Length: 252
Image 1 (tube, rainbow, N blue to C red):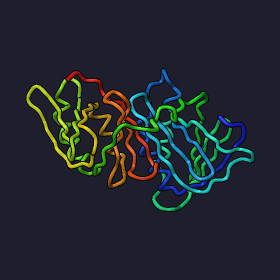
Image 2: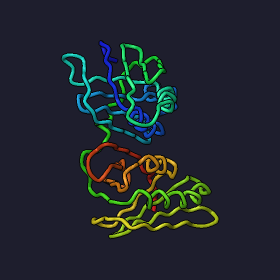
Image 3: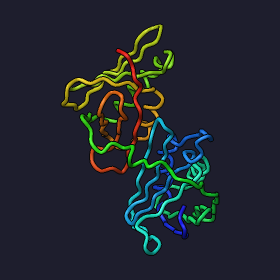
Image 4: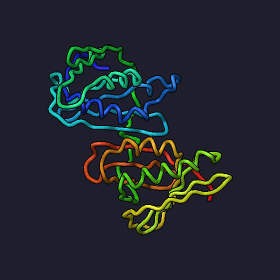
């Protein structure tokens, strides 16, 4: 993936959390083997971890000061996702550093008295920056805890339906979340900040839940361009995480 070896150090807890929060979006489909990996991009001021599977995209940033090989503005590697997830679970809490070493074909995490090794994946990762919308028609601001408890309750009904679907309907100050099944309908309403015309969009309940479960800010933004284009989920300010989830096309 890169011609020369590079080494970075970052706090164990930050590395563990960043990897843990993107693992749900890493593909398990071996026919597209490159997507079973996690893309790690290192720039002088940040490290990005990216996973995507064709339905969801997850990106987490860890800020810091990182030394790159001479003449390089950034370096990257594609690490087998399942193995990186196992390594991350072994990391401790706190600021104790983990040392990450990437060679041409090998990857190592060293922390305390432990060293973990694996081979890197070879090939081109999808250009995720082309997938993430840089502008949007509308956005809604909402509290993470309100949203996830509403999703959890509505999902109980959605799972009994044919397609595990959650429908979101936005009006001036509230979001209605509905799920339909043969034996009934679930309706959850939460307060939001939303200023555009009313808007409807639908998602696979599990895909949406996986994303919101990994949001760690008290408030968040959902950004939309249309009911059939990807929805971006990010913090109110900054971009320390970005999630993207594809909606489901429904005929109302």
